[in-house]
Image (cartoon, rainbow, N blue to C red):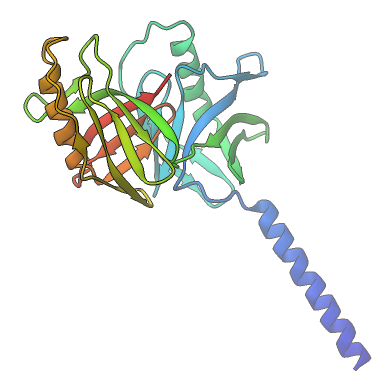
Length: 261
């Protein structure tokens, strides 16, 4: 019995060691969250903070990653075994942004993607490393909680032309409070009503709206009509590095917002 007890203790100790080693070597779950870049290794080898006005994001799905690279959008295939990670050459849109530093940051980020060899996920942080196990990119998880957030509309689907920008000289807003109540202003009238979130799904309305008529700026009433119509089609949402997008059942964007000042 004494020998048996010793063997049992040895077996348990051995198994615990296996569990600890497995956890240590596991990178963690990549897919699901929206990750926003916080720091990256500069050409001088020093970790550099990103430009706050031009967020870089990464969203992992089955075998591919997509996101914003600061100015452009990109996507790339990736391979992982749960600890190692490599990316194929990303496909990138070809927009040029004039804001100082944005294109240099984007170029550096896309270059560093090609040198990634491993990763770790810890709580709300994602760390990517090169083959020398140096940290080269660090991300934080984007909170997808809508509760107690305030937004300003930047564009919406107007039902005729397509997806359009908000009229200059007008401000369209949306606030989601903690009691499941959505409210805002269309640029002329105030509106309000219930909302319900379940995972990434959102159900809005019915919405009540005041009945003023506004003439300035020109077209503000058509904007109001298009925006309210777009809200009726919303079934899901997504919070990115600096925006909120509401989608219809086909995955098409209905409205896009920026954080309210």
